[in-house]
Length: 409
Length: 134
Image 1: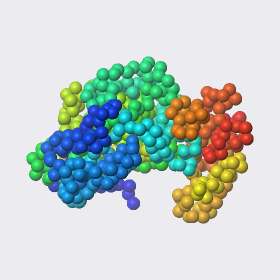
Image 2: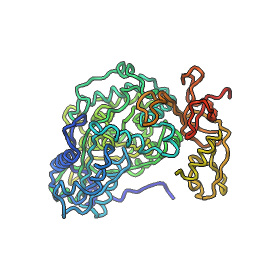
Image 3: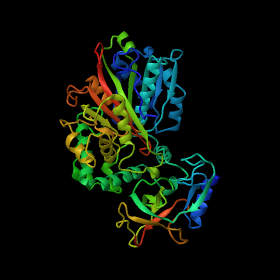
Image 4: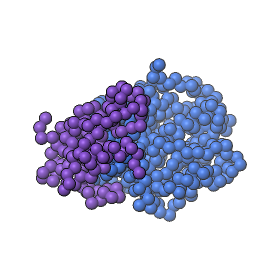
């Protein structure tokens, strides 16, 4: 048995699944916005971007929130079908969930439904109210989800401690200093200054400020931990044939994907400085025929600097042990490999499951060349998307490429 | 009510024993305790007492944002411990005599610390301390 997954669709094929539009609302603290209101608004933005109408959508793929049990139930029971005027028309409405990597798996699900003919056009959407939610309910969800109740909950584990365990091991294995790790946060803040949707737009950051902030979970300082935010994002996928029928000329296709679920419990990960990234990357590169040098930008989950540094190394973008230093040097605006061009979770805002969604749609937006001019990566054709969920239980890699109607692969 | 595997593991801790499951068919140890052997899927699992020695893969000292019920424990240390038996777990770490964890580093040798009646340990999870010598 070979460990390969030959791609069953190809560029130019009628059934090839493609992104045709994205939508996003600003991330931050917006107590006056509402959950269903934001979902509706972001859906309409994505549809406008795609030049489609709600009735062009037959399948709604919902990405869960982590702020409220009752809002979760509303999603599962198809409220959005009614809100978007698709009652009696929509074929299916359902949820996919793998924590922070949900967006990557949603792309696989949508792509599979489209290429097999089970869906014509899929709207995937997400809203998180972490910035304004009921604090007690949110902390309960955050402290208990994704942690084995029998074995790890009794230790007093929580999310920053998980990030700290990964960061400590990464710093030990790589010889990265506290300043090296802080420099990743500073690089992300530079990108956020170019993104009108970023929570930290207009707020500068220095390595000295990061290192002077209080210690929250050694070795993590407060300013190295993500700020919880409200936010919403959406994307529309359909087949290349259906896109052409609607007169859409510019799209983004999936050249390949790879993944590796390396653990569930943080205490069961064999190497916290490696995680599932090398396996996921190998699988993605094999499926696509790409190598690490074939993309012009990357959007990689960054709830903590070490998470991204480890991914950069596993993806072969940076040398082993150099991930954090490489990011701060080469992934900045104007750098060799623009990364997390929206400011990432650490500076655009951590919108729960939406953090990965925001990075994904930023990658698609860049390839569609619809980002604001100051951060648009000139002439980009290919983008690496990296996601991870729960206690960094999985590494998910999507390799996306710009595709123009009529182009020959 | 706890599942039998949880109750057995915790009863071991309260007796001062760190228990590891062992498969009666393939013989391999496994942790955390499971309902079937993750290597050969046998459901004939028994328990062995760990020697309680291992190395510290990584650790942190949580200083803020404790989950409900742990607020009074702050600050407290958590570590991923790789046991000599070839399995690993997340555990709490006892501070050194000076009350700090300053002496802890990755890959250091640790030993299981059985709960003491007067100590801070709770019997629901395993606790470790720095081993006196290699």
